[in-house]
Length: 405
Image (spheres, rainbow, N blue to C red):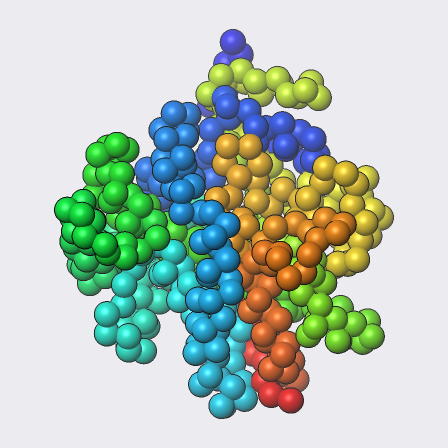
C-alpha cells in the first residue's frame, strides 16, 4: 500500500481510456461534491458500493422508456408552449432564465414537487430555492464566501421543505396508503413517490429524502438548462457558417439531437470528474493511484481527444464521424456505476444506422431546442451574451435573444 503525502496534488487523467477505466473502478469513489454536502450528502450520486446499488435499483424503476416517452411526447411539449407563450408575445427572452424556467417545470414533475397554486409567484419561489441548491452542488467552484453560502443553502432547504416538500410528501403518503388499502389510485411516477414507497426497504430518513429530491430538482433543471443555452449558441454559430442547414434544424430531429450531443461533448455539465481512491489502484494503462489520492478526470481534454474525435475535435461539428464504442457526447455523462441516471431523458437514445425516426427517443433538450428554432430564435444584436462571473465554471450569465419570424 502506498501512502499519500498530505497536500499531495491530484492525479489528473486526460485520456479517454484512463477516464473510462477510472469511472468503472469500484475503488474510486465520487468526490466531485465533497464541498457541497449541505445539499449533496447522502444523495444517489454521492453514494458508493451496496448503498448506491440498492438505491439506484429502486430509482431505476421510474427511469424507464415508457416514462420517458410520456414526458417527451405528451408532458413536456405542453410545458414548453405554456412557458414560452409570454416571451413570444414580447418577442424577446433571456435564454439563461428561460432554460432554467423550462427545465424547472420538468424537473419538478420528475422529482415530485407539487405546485398547488399554479401561480407565477409560486413558481418564482421554487425557482429561487432551486438556484440556491444549484449553488450548493457547485460549491467547489464558488468564488465567494463558502461558509456564508452554506448557511444560506441550509436555510433555503428548511424553507423549501416547509412550503413545497412537506405538502408533496403528505399527498403521496395519502395516495400510497389508499393504494395499499386496495383503492385504484394514480400514484405519481416520480422520485419522491418512489422513495416513499420503498422508504423502509432503503432505510432513508426524511433528511436524506429531502436532499435526494432537491438534488433531482437541481440536476434536472441545471444540467439540461445549461445544455439548452449552449446548444442554441452552437447551432446559431453553425448556421452562420452553414446556412444550407437551416431547414435541418427545423425539420430533422436526428440532426438536432446530434447537435445536442456535440454540445454536451464540448461542454460537459462539469468540466471535470473527481474521485477519491479507497485503495491502491492501477489502471490498465499502468497509471498508479495510491490509496487516498484525489483523481481528477479532465473531461474538457478527454472529450476533445484528436485521436478519437479528429483534428477538429475542439470545434462544434455535428456531422463528425466517430470511432466504434465512443459515444457522441464523449464521457460527459460519466460511465460505469455512476453513469447519469437521466441521460436518456435529457439527451435521448443515441441513434444508429436504421433508426426509425418515428419510434426514437430524442431527449427533452432536443425537443425544446427544435421548438426554439421553430419560433425564430436569433441573437439580439444590441445585447450580446455575457459569461457568469460568479463561478469558475464556463456558464453563460445572460444570453438575450429575439423571437418571432
